[in-house]
Image 1 (tube, rainbow, N blue to C red):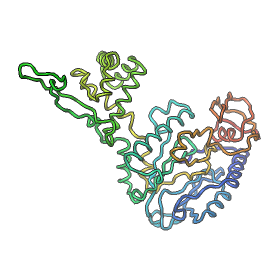
Image 2 (image 1 turned 135 degrees about the horizontal axis):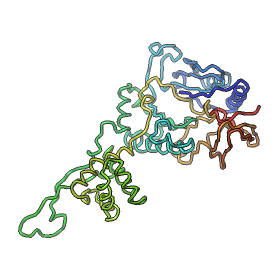
Image 3 (image 1 turned 90 degrees about the horizontal axis):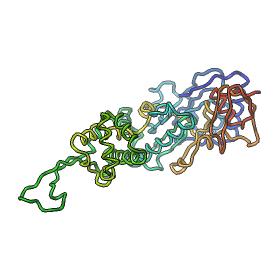
Image 4 (image 1 turned 45 degrees about the vertical axis):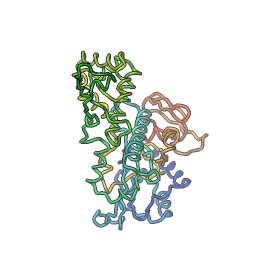
Length: 411
């Protein structure tokens, strides 16, 4: 939910004025089944409590509400209700709910060490993984039944309106989350064990009428459905990365996965110096690793590769059948960015710090004093400044830094 930096009265009035201008001049398309939704908002005042249980039956009602109230944050229910204005959930009478996936940089592994711009890059990569690998490929959701939305903050929402998912209960939605996150799946199940006649493998005659049988571990095919194929693709990607980055990187990662240093060095040598990685990638067999090294690959490396392709989503958002979600095309009260609806194709070229900024005349600028050292890519350039320094910034940049508490407008 909303994270709001307190503002003094003049700054609050200035920011509210920019939001009011946006809502007076911009069209905010109504969500489908508008009359069945509950609306809620944080007002652009010193108070921070949410106003809930609004109902806006027509697009005109929605436009009037935004222009009149000028909310700092505005949400609508993923659920559909028979009586959305009732103050209790029982009174509303739940009819179904969109399936919502929420990816936020706060929840991504390793994102805490990244700056804001880098977090936006990382979270978009994970969104693409979620949409392409899980929603489109595994769940079979049509792109026409899915809406992607930049949240205006540090993440993205996916709204799924496929009729098959609308009646799902919270526990049923939890099962979808568990699948995306790989909960309960043993990555070693992507490896099959077979027995290979050595003479068949070598393509020659067996002398003395005897042959030996070799136990072979083989990864599932790259295009296997579900987590088996996903794990194989992750292992192949890991081997490719090690070939590009070198043996020392591979050894360091192997040690991190729990392989003893001496054995990690031996495994890396076989994989990278002796061509083992290429042989695994081409045959999907692990026999290039002798004995216990093969077992360590099974026990340590394959599970680690699977972790890298676990889907990311905020489970409480997906499982909450009464969830309030940020209204697409509204403004985010913590950044001043637009909450931008996107197609899958548009997502590839979308850059929030360029494409989501508040619309404003290009010549309009605002004098600010930086409260912190700041440096952000902005449009085709950068916004930079040292704490205590003054500058004149484009309106959208000034609003962004002000709402984040990193600058103060000199009004």
